[in-house]
Length: 420
Image (cartoon, rainbow, N blue to C red):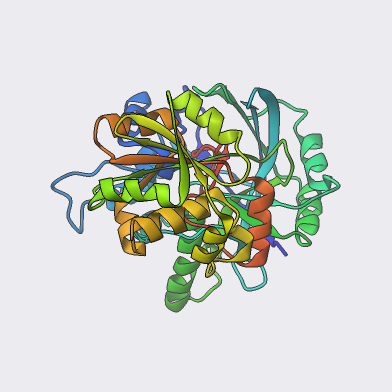
């Protein structure tokens, strides 16, 4: 069940913000340090200053990226840069995009979802400690959901999406195309009967986290923290989410590649890969990705010392033995095999070490550049985890390794804020 709640969103004031396109940003966890600087320069009111403020060597307990975000949010509200809608609403958000050469249109809506037992949003990935520590500091400082958690629901008859489509015949409040050629459109819906129809339908739906596992867990822990202080009736007992239906138009998934660094005696460990995998040398990145995608069963791409390889599992029995403690639902996923066989068994990395020594990117060319510049010792390229696999794993109650999926495109941050 999903208890959906409309809210009076906090939004950029178009009378004061003329170049509205310039204030939006991707979710914080996909923003590189370089992109952070670009977003700062893009617009003086860009939401990056709230979701991922710059750090300073002079930061202390009283003055840091979190306190500055809290103070800046209050300043923007006080000066009318951000204004609160008068009517509790849901917000329709569509994205027109191209994926693997196919034009698609995602239709979804933003609303609050109540955080309570029996109303959970099902996760599919494990989380990391450091990002949660970071986000809990931010939510304490700003007392708001600055960006939505990306979720999907099962609606085989498309009843909810049909209601949403009937509401978007009028001109959108916001419409812009971003650097990736994705068209974003945004509408406010304040009609009570329309909202109630969607609420009634959503009460029968299971919801699944596509992106935002860390923020969802932080919202749950923040609710417990605030309930001890104030009781459980504040607006912190819900979280802002972006909901979209489970279908081919709405859910496109890309792989997330792994960069490893500072692995002790890495050469001997790379040599050990041949005990478990058939290792084939290929000419370049393009050939590696093409060859990998065409393989049956498990296959990984690897870049090491500026050379490219395709790794195929030699024997599934060895795999089953090494992954016997893993949940059955994800033993057949490339990311799970990479995590269990390569990182845990061959590289001997414990959970804390994996968090320290592995970083992530969806850009394969960037991964290669990191290896060439020696920012990373090696890069690994798993195949895509399909949306149907994500759903099955979430329903089973199990979780995949961190960063197993990259749902594309991400909802942008800055369209609306849920202020507590």
